[in-house]
Image (tube, rainbow, N blue to C red; front, side):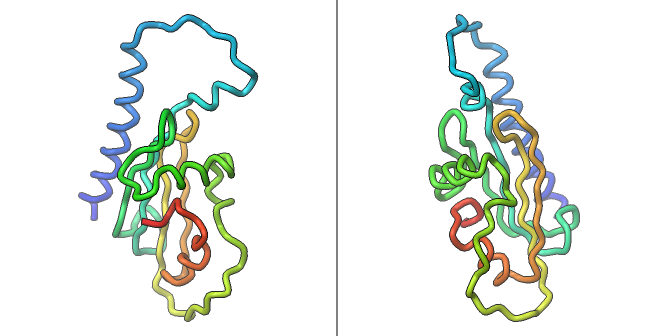
Length: 151
């Protein structure tokens, strides 16, 4: 469990440091006129998304994890990076807003907690988000319409 968590943390750190190093060694660009708010389009966006078993993110056993880079282009190990990035842009990176309307899926009340997490950088701002669901059915019902956690 620690190995997987450390691997995810190391991957996220490498992604972020690689982006920082590549911009640090680049020749300074001539300033260009940009509309207000345009800088947010070019700020780095690199995330590690995970789904695990457990009651809280710190102690959950990671079952699946992917990387998602949205800026400068959609990429990563996520199976649908373009769709996932589009969804995150639509909610300005607010993961809590990804939940769909109440699902009509019938789920049991079995307590088998599932944790979804997002860690990294979204448009230059640090992100550390997690949500715990009572079981996999509840998670899938809540996030059913989205591509972000469909991996």
